[in-house]
Amino acid sequence: LVVRHAVGNDTGLRYLRAAALAWQPTTSTSSTLRVGAQDEVLPATPTSLVWLVPGPVPAPVVQWIESGGTALLANDSALDGFALTSTPWRDDDGTPLVESGPRGKGRVLRFTHPLRPDAMPALVEADFPQHLRALFDTPVASPARVLASDYEPVAGGATYPVAPRDLQPWLALLIALLVLVERWMATR
Image (cartoon, rainbow, N blue to C red; front, side, top):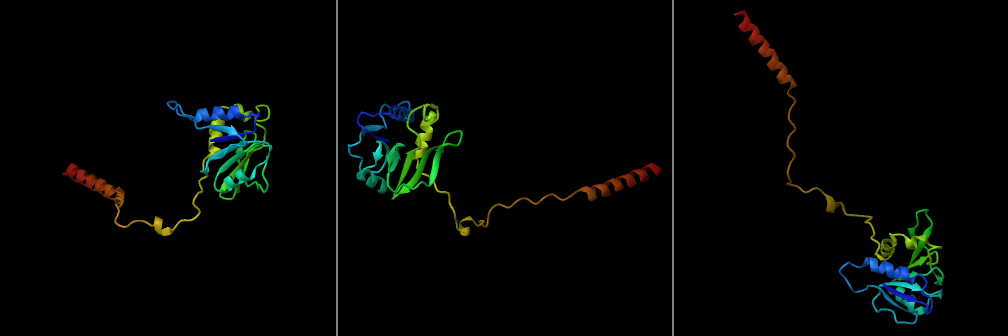
């Protein structure tokens, strides 16, 4: 996770650091969080970016997103042409916390509230790291169509055993035969 913030403004940064530490295995000592100022160069390969700089998003960051990156913007960051298509995270009351939309090959996410506990109580909840991690996981598209030939039954498999026949008529005949034999022997 790459975080860029305005110089002198680290609002919300400690919550992101805590979430990144929660993602770490207990045996790992290296951090997955790379924090820097807004003017630092972004990684060449598109990864996950948290942009905590208010105002318009600069052109290099927009190009980075369009080339396949996923960026989570602060609520006061502005991106021209941002079209809301989904709400991947809501609180318990149903209030949207993060809204998202596509941008080129990438994806843009934006907080709807400032990263302060009084404005966004989910920051201090125990499941905040899991929700934040789920935002950056690639959404899995469920299959819409499948070829019927891929799911046709295979011939030559095991057959089910034949169901046993009902013994009631034979049992009734056996009982009648036993009664006749018993009466024959008793009258003899």
